[in-house]
Length: 403
Image (cartoon, rainbow, N blue to C red; front, side):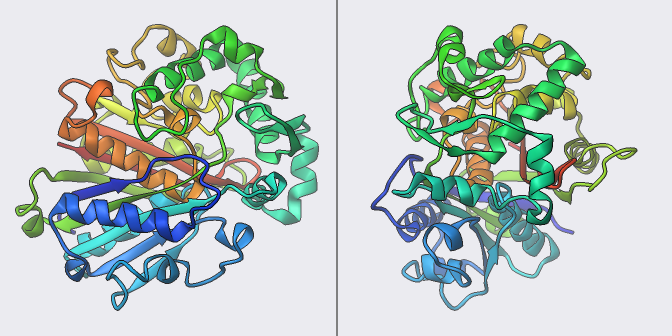
């Protein structure tokens, strides 16, 4: 396997764009990534298009990538359509990495794009709810009973949000196991809102206090509205290439490890998927958690950041709240987590999220992150998970990049 580099990245603003189709988002991100790499569409050997819910939201099943990219100049090369729930974008990235690493192509484009908003908000929640084994949906609902899902801005009461009920159940288990509190979760959301306020492409750019977050409407105890990621739209693209092509790029970033795993149906006695993926990524990259300078994790709900910080070895099990309280994970700390604002503030257009995390890491490693720049960042890690099997995430991606 040969070394792989990221030559260019592109990303749209994330937000609610009811009149903007997936195609427009994808075209913008794609054009930005090509321009950033000083390459043309003719140089791309393969494209991997990550999208999770277009079939449910817009009715566009099949050939989603070909439809979204038909005006980009990329038609004619292999375009692979990739779907792995919230890990769709990172799945596309991993497959693009495999193509370049194997020598099958010299340049590959990974792109994630999603339109999750819909005038009927219940349709958006229903689309998200398909990321489980539907044959055991009743069993999961019984295990994770919850409250009414709410829109992120708190404007109206919506239908039940199964995934927020599920995340609330995971949060309660974590509280019982570690002594973590709802205030700890609110501190995560407050930190990421402060980071997101510095990100011009974030969906939400309003800093929130711990008290504001705790006082926001309960979605499913202990989760409040501002502890949950919003519904939104957007796209992000990453252009990968061989070392030969990277020599032509102005500021390439090396892919040190790209790992993609499925979770176990019954994790015990296995480690969870995030822990296994992190261990494998560290082994491939030849680094450890102590070497990381910046991290992006999948905080679809605030407790996830604390849980993942333990799973990837930034602190011992149960010490996620202590790590947060120490200031280590805040901008200016030892290892900032989610300087982009994370899913909580940057936004979570499902199919775009994995690529967007990598765009943030590339910007950080290049020193182009502006007010949210992590000084002297040289090694970054992204964790992205999608779907749920009942005891573990269905898909887990772990990526390590270096300057």
